[in-house]
Image (cartoon, rainbow, N blue to C red; front, top):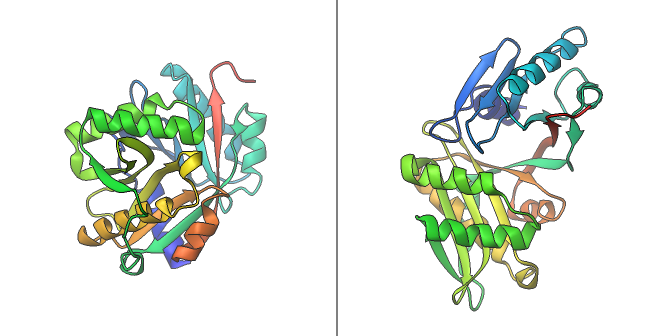
Length: 260
């Protein structure tokens, strides 16, 4: 599959850091993302087989534990090899989170979606700490948990690399009811859509679709070819109706310090 191969080459194997002080390292048969503080740490790509997988998993656990990371993620895709890589990760102490569907849409088509907001809704572009804090309020209400690492990443990117992030709020008057962001890197064909959370009482009104359309228009202006989403079961049917296709399934495997 040509699109999936390009996704793997650019977004996984050839990825760039997602924050100003983060690094991407190729260590043998894996590509890992390493970040200080609350930044995201994890393995994005691997080229393993039955004979090398267990040793490589152990090497990455030793590396991140040696850095003092309280946790890191091994981002597994259902087409990764060996076929039992998930079982091997669990045996090494990783805990899987719910699976998400890897979906990709063509920007030239998505940019044609209507961007008229539902009645009572306006869009607010996020450029400062106040806007980021409003986004965090939305995410806490939509997803039921605080995400301090996302706040730190957003603030850092907006201050130091604003060309890599586009964040937006849907407002009902002075109340933030939905929030989303787009992450992109210069020269890459793919941009990622993240967040997309709406507080429960405002769901079902087309706000999620509006935020996808808004970011698709921006992606078109920036010359981006594809939009990529790790979709939950709730968002997958909406994205399919909007024109996104399925490339695979991804499962975050989380290793936590002290896991066994």
